[in-house]
Length: 259
Image (cartoon, rainbow, N blue to C red; front, side, top):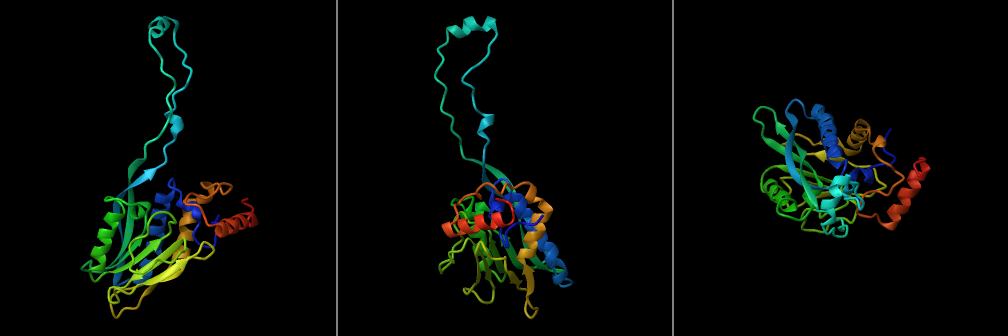
């Protein structure tokens, strides 16, 4: 089954499945690009790690209000003052999560020509080991002769820095060509839009090669069988949609029989 949405599926942003979605998208993009880059270039998957906040199932840690004890233990327990049941809270737990990016490299000397970055939640979360770390890596690329294609399919968090305002759309793609900086190309993406076909620049005079993001997402969705993992009767993960997008989403899911 394919996603019920024409482009990005906001349910894929859930923390429980996004790392898998990310890996599937990176793999699908490489499969699509590889024959278009050959024989002068190759697309290489480069892994990295990030610390992500995860949801903790509190039911595993709840302490019952009533306990059953053996009779010979009751005398020792009787002398002990039992405090009222505690209020149960939770810590924000971060785990090391594996992600990856794509690098287009020349055949032979392995020179990096273009970096394709699919943002993760850690790239957009404030902190020295999160957004700040990504900004440092991003600045290194921008100061180099390497092109940067940045894909943001996450509504939450803080987008990386830009001298001009970002479009107020839930999703966006940005291309920074090494020979045109500080000028960048931006593709705003609404929830109702298919993901665009974007150019992947190479070394001059070689022409750009196209990357069909919507086709890559469709492949990743089908291979990941997210139709079996997502309950479309629920609301999508945070942040909340705008009222207009929420109304459109409800209508869309009802039209395909999922609401």
